[in-house]
Image 1 (cartoon, helix red, strand yellow):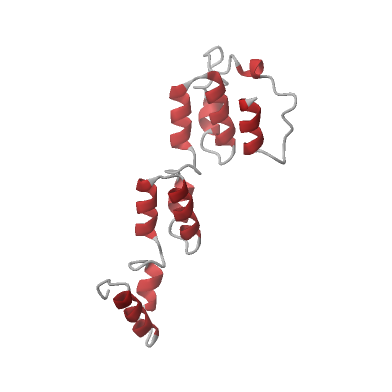
Image 2 (cartoon, helix red, strand yellow):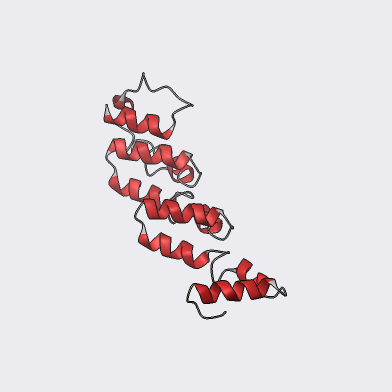
Length: 152
């Protein structure tokens, strides 16, 4: 089924979903217990933990709770606006990978943000530091001029 394929794509090596029963989760979104409900403390806490958040988002989706699903997506540290993604956009090489992911996901806003934070880009902190090293700075100036940018 579609749900089984979605689960297997999230966790292909760790869990077998041959026994998956959606009925187990049909009461997940109800406020029968404030600690374990979709708006409960455990769900809200788990939404801030990488990978756990993905599982909780799936449970919200299975329960049909769109409000909780949106909240979990916004809280996901590995999501497009997550704190880990924002932090990793300042790391050389990782930034390039994140730009590719943003571009593949057609997320123009996040792609632009990652380009502006690129540490080895034309205004990046690594580039600016290298501009102060003799001879290296001449090469960087040549690269700037070749690409049509003003010399930084």
